[in-house]
Image 1 (cartoon, helix red, strand yellow):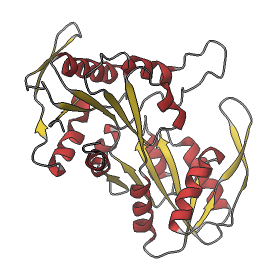
Image 2 (cartoon, one colour):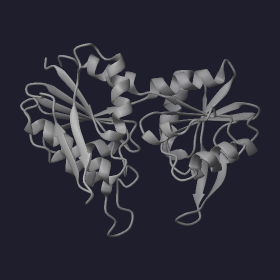
Image 3 (cartoon, helix red, strand yellow):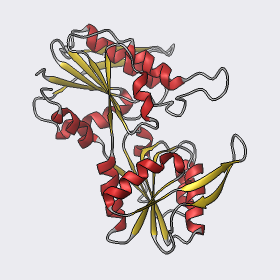
Image 4 (cartoon, helix red, strand yellow):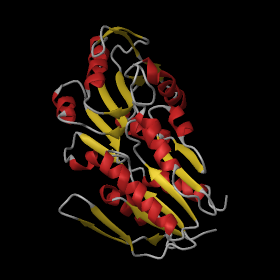
Length: 311
């Protein structure tokens, strides 16, 4: 079994440190020198010896700069003799652009997968570890020698729901029918009811809620969604559950992106009593507010590598 050496992109250094804090002592801390040039180019040098080791690289595709840095470091590890490489991508960007709806639209989720599929081969292969993808099918876009692994944060979500409820009766809910099966699975594990809203699309940007699938009268409603960007769809659903008689509403999401004033809109809406997300996206760590609780996916990631050790 190859010795593991852990690297990260600059914006995911926090998650690297959280994994290192709970990882076995034989996980090596990968070192790099990074500099930015005045013309906008970037210098990376791997200063640790990666030859004959499994390189574990943490980084998201949260923007184009981050994506290229992840690709560059991965290439560098392989070129410097890594026996195998595991790319851990906590948040896979462009995941809502997984298919073309209109003629000529570029399927950027697939393009990102094709990019990483172009990494050179290693003697023991390469893996891409993904967490709570917006669409499961994205994992099938990876080609060549890349083996995709999709981790689900159900345990994190279940535990967060129980902490929020504190013994109160609650309903596990989704923002729309698209996440209904996933939320129903969570509800079954928790032995509670599931609910989702029915939507009618009025235009490309506007929808109208036409109904709710379950009785939420006088109950705590805990909404789960895989990602929150601006919070618009979430607040529309939360308003519908409140209008249907919900006593209170809390929200759990895996990917807290909170673009623009998304977080402030949710906090100031008066609809949500508590918001929980994970640390798959660095934006969540920039928010210091008791309204938001951030859970780490470091144990989930480390657990995967421990479960597959020697496999």
